[in-house]
Amino acid sequence: MEIKLPYKVACLNCGAVVLTDMELECVGSYERKMGLELEHLATFDGVCPKCGGDIYVQVEVWEYPEGNIEDYGVVTKGAKELEEPKFFDSGCLSEELL
Image 1 (cartoon, helix red, strand yellow):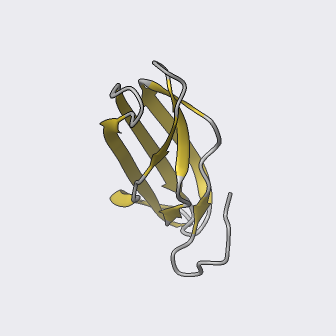
Image 2 (tube, rainbow, N blue to C red):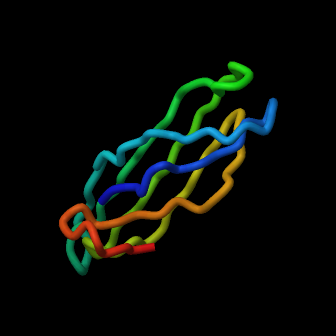
Image 3 (cartoon, rainbow, N blue to C red):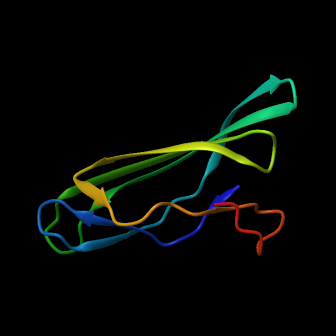
């Protein structure tokens, strides 16, 4: 599972658009009735290129059953979302899941 880049947020200090560079990592797996549930996490911890303000973005994705986005959440500090994240199955780069 991968996040489509660039994922855009806006700096809360100056409004500049910030392109985040993040990679989803599998941080957990749990056996459930229809197979594994996979938990993925991506983080961006950087600064605004315009004003230098601190920006933190965390994207968490739950995949269940495998290959299906069950849910996701985004946490931002110092920035706001400009778009919803898009995900794709890294096994099939042309298949967009959300």
